[in-house]
Image (cartoon, rainbow, N blue to C red; front, side):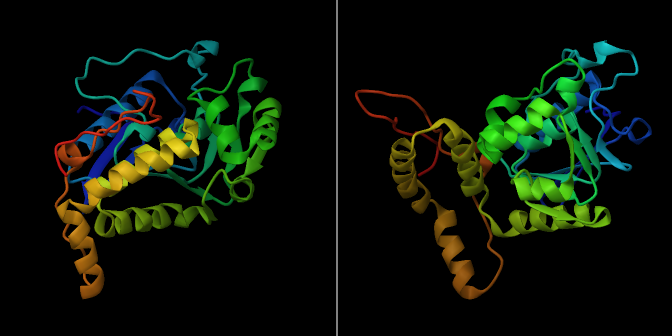
Length: 283
């Protein structure tokens, strides 16, 4: 990959993705969007990557769409000529942690909402500002935010476009933790490293899949699906390894690979059932 607006590095199982337009407060451009999708696709395909952290250079995480050229900044661009899979954070089969180190406005907050865990600066200014600019929130916000914080709170945030701080983001349930700005990345990296070492990759991938799909899945359907998947996971080598590592008080040595061993979860109704059989290459 040839990257200009994003930095990407992998170390000890953790991929660090950094928005790299600090001179423009990391404002969003079609190129930035495409490069973020490319690095997410690369991390998803790399079995050496166990978790991802997304952060930004400078004092802002992302100040929203780049409007230096006028309202055309709201319009998305197509993919570049670069080849490779393109994914949003919620599509990556590894846990993705947003380290919101500074101000997050517009797409600067809707993008990290597609991550699984959010650590935010206490003093970060956050705003669903779109309705104050004559457009609307994107990236699934109208479905996702009400499910995360509740309809009433989501309506207030998206219909007023008011500004709030990272500390309130935690109170609302929009983020997991609010910490001083200079600690955001270290806290996020600590969580990511713990996942990379102690969490079975296949289990994490499947649990993430079920959680995101569960936003629109009845509880009885999910119960049946979980029950069908548990025997598959219990029959895989990592189940025994997790138990042995626990009793032997050591780090586990996981064998499962996300690229080949995650059962394929099929959703829908078949022959009167509310779930379908799963299939995969293991188990």
